[in-house]
Length: 294
Image (cartoon, rainbow, N blue to C red; front, side, top):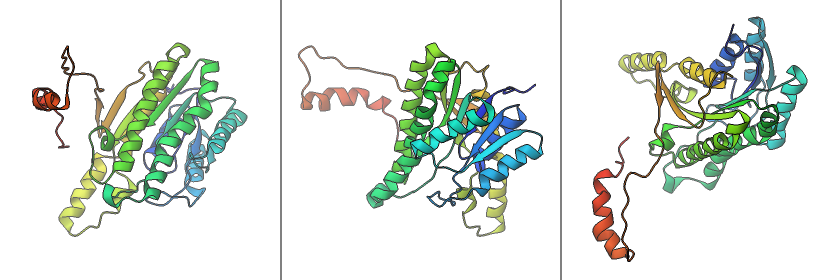
């Protein structure tokens, strides 16, 4: 008996990396899987390739599971609605969406092109919106649904050169939080995962010597995407009651992040001025400021 027996799960970005391991584990845990992957290059992109999604679906079927492939883009709402229709037509239902699909366009903000900003938000934030928007009425009507979305430490903590990625990933945190609040009475849950995992992008780092090669090989083993898949599948399971939370995964370590709340306030009956804010408020709070360090 698997934790997803009898359920249907859509996994985006399911052709490689975290998505691939998640799709395979969903099937192993009893789910019928719609494996979606646009099939872009190492940094992501519009170039499509149906191969990765089809390969994972075939691997699931060869292992005795049930899966179909889809190579449409999460950036197009009509295509995402088609993923729901594909799940309903093929398997008669959909119970969970796991959405690790994504790309990178890393640059320092002062060098960032508008196009690189737009495409990253389009894939990550709008893509997350699309998969949720296309399926929310279905989940609410059946009073069952699990969203597993993906954020990043680049947004939660920060990372130089990733303003576009960080902004998109923090937007997903807000999206998930409100989905969880609005879905509570309808048994619709939403959580986010901030993964630390080996990816194709890390694999492109030039290897200069044997010491670096050994170090990267150890990182690859320690940060296998399969570790992330374990949590993603658990959060997609009908037994999972957690909702509105931010989780992290690093190897065999699963983390729960806190969420922003007021830690100190300052009140002045006759109101503040810019000068008194500078002289009194900010200095009184300075020791509680969050450091720029990661």
